[in-house]
Amino acid sequence: MAQPTVAIVGRPNVGKSTIFNRVAGERISIVEDTPGVTRDRIYSHGEWLGHNFNLIDTGGIEVSDQPFIKQITAQAEIAIDEADVIIFMVNGKQGITDADERVAQILYRSNKPVVLAVNKIDNFESRADIYDFYSLGFGDPYPISGAHGLGLGDLLDEVIKNFPEAPEEKKDNSIRFSLIGRPNVGKSSLVNAFLGDNRVIVSDVAGTTRDAIDSKFVHDGQEFTIVDTAGIRKRGKVYEKTEKYSVMRAMKAIDESDVVLVVLNAEEGIREQDKRVAGYAHEAGRGVIIVVNKWDALKKDNHSQQQFEAAIRAEFQYLAYAPIVFVSAKTKQRLSQLPDLIEKVNINHKKRISSSTLNEVIMDAVAMTPTPTIKTRKLRIYYATQVATQPPAIVLFVNDPELLHFSYRRYLENQIRKNFDFTGTPIRIIPRSRK
Image (cartoon, rainbow, N blue to C red):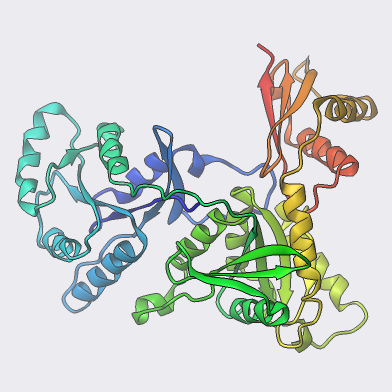
């Protein structure tokens, strides 16, 4: 189920990015063990008191004569369209400005919960300054300090109070998969080709993701649900010039999926945005299949597919586990392979290995390549156990987690994959001290 979304809105220089980084916390500062995962700082995840949510920084609203209203409207539309709760941030040192009031006027009409955060309140004596902000009409203003991290707990307490109630989950035995990627890679055509090929549409129901329809079909007795992210509206020049906010809808689809199809355009090759969107699917721990669409439109020779696959492996090193399929939505080339592959990846994503079998593999791996020694200290692995699925997560009990170097972690993962079929799914290896 999709997580709630919190948008931070405000004019420039009120400290939105600082608060964004503090709320996102270690999610922002994590450096992926494997190179190649790109990150877009405009979007991340947050967690507070067990509540997970998506977080966006809408950027500063530039104040000038003509573009003033246009910029405010564009930023407010993003917040209105995407957010379940809006944090309206103002600068406590500067007081209420005309720009603050214009943003407030638009947010009044949003019918979304708005929590007013007064930033740059760095000491208790100056908190009396926040009372002027009651005039904005959003109830109690919450004094915070992005620089010192003060008051964030009270602010987030209020934010999670306004989260929508989670609907009762109905049992659904279908495999949910989404197609994500840049505009014009052919996601809509692939969705239509899926439904056209199978023809057995169980139902069309409105999805929880805005601008998406969840369509169901049956293939060889297995029910599938497509979480369609193709219908992304772009209103106005701001939406035409940038794709960064479309990542929001892709992330919501990823949250709802068992398997994600990362769609590339064979004609255009690999772009930076492809790696960015695929990185979200990897970080979310979903099963992943790389689908190269429009393969029919490419002039090919006997080496074209091999060369294109090599380029994908070089650019998407963190998706080494993901199978690659070259298809054409237009000619329906190889489309018949995808439902079976999606089902296989879903099974692997949910796979669980017994502790005894897993420990045999780990001990054999250690015997073949002994654990590293760092500064005279040798890594010792005492026990391994799988603690979760979707994705598979394996805890290694060791003498010191700091001694598990990235290269040896990758070696252990490769040994696990050699012994068990985990095609299409990431594996999390988590070192823990035996104490």
